[in-house]
Image (cartoon, rainbow, N blue to C red; front, side):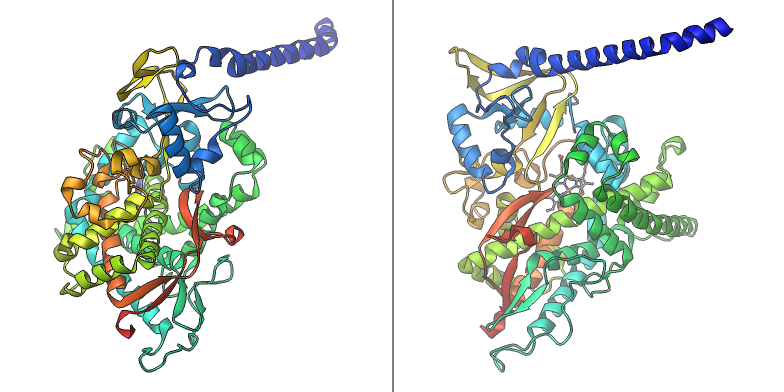
Length: 570
Ligand code: HEM
């Protein structure tokens, strides 16, 4: 025994040294394969595409929404509909395609999934809801969620859109003050504008008085309104963020989003590949996200318990259960195989998912719409004239069938898609079919792109929505008329609602009808009674979604100041 211990003591440094050498060798082999050997056999090498230095990337050109339209335009002219570009370096070749056939294949084939990094990012933020899932688990969650988004469910939720749009209109009406026909220069609002609270670190004031009319931050107001809508329609919860009582769940959610919107630091990027880092030494962002999720989860637990009870009681007494998404989800969950039902945590994760996916996106879409109306007084006037013929916004059928309102909403979604692009990774080797073959440098033509397991494919949502090849010469112009003449629309556009903004395929937006209807109610309510004028040059930036900022004021974050006055005062 003593001999063995002695031998071990003597051998330990040698063993440690040997382990270290093996580790370094393995690391070196991994690096050699990743940076030098694997790229040599990457089939994407044969494709045309822009070049950069070995460590150079093309993210800025392709992801910055102030650059990307021009980049897409120039590079598709040069390289065709499908090309490759540098991700984190020349060793990380990625595919981007504007070819509908290729896009359809990638978004629908089981050979492609959301990358693990995206799944991890989403689970850190919103838990294990449908957005963060793939494969069988994803299909199962989607099936349980489906009844909450059908047309019957939408009809039940419609009054919530009307109620919240009405509250917003009244709020603006109060802020604008007495009619300008009797008072040309509105006095400042008597109560502080809804916007700032302790702990709710809003960088932008919601309102600002200027000599003629009132300047409102459309971005902030719409954010509050859509959060209220998803609270009520999603799970019967009153956030009250429009009335400035934004309670603690609302504040926690906003804090969480704001933290997640910051560009990731080195530690967070590193943690995407090695999540253990964040467990040992969490970054400030991670701490904020965890604290906020705790608040949201605590409230979620209470909401789920109450809703479970309500649904069970309603089913016992043969009453119809409440029609919010969570109640419908619980009901749908109860009718599935008991072994596969969602547990409370999974239900709570769906709540965070809906909050995340359903509020910011729709609020931005409405804000972008008001922006385009402000830039186009003729379109605004024509829309208002159509809206003035509307008997009541409460009539869902009528609102939904107004042609010009529909055209304005569709055109906004086309030109300002809140999700700039999406990404998939090949989970096995595959061949991507093309409708526009690629001309290779050696003179041959490629009809399908071979792609190997682990390669990324970027789907340029905004690029496809703005492509001149698809939409014609006026693709970058806000022209709702293109939707009034169906014969002018591109034939068989594959995205939901004829644009790519909601993506397509099994992971496309489950809430697209909800979003379009909500947009229509808010725009019809606001554009009928108010007039919008631009007050600043607005640019776009991407943080999870595409947000507006005032040119030269990026450090102030997302804002979309717009001058609002009553339409009958004009
Ligand atoms: C204008 C508003 C909206 C836009 C532009 C939008 C856009 C999108 C897009 C592009 C995706 C797919 C992302 C990908 O493929 O990687 C998506 C997924 C999703 N959206 Fe929306 N969305 C909007 C509103 C909503 C609303 C109102 C809800 C719910 C109430 C919602 C719930 C979801 C969910 C749950 C997913 C994940 C679906 C899945 O993975 O199966 N969205 N959305």
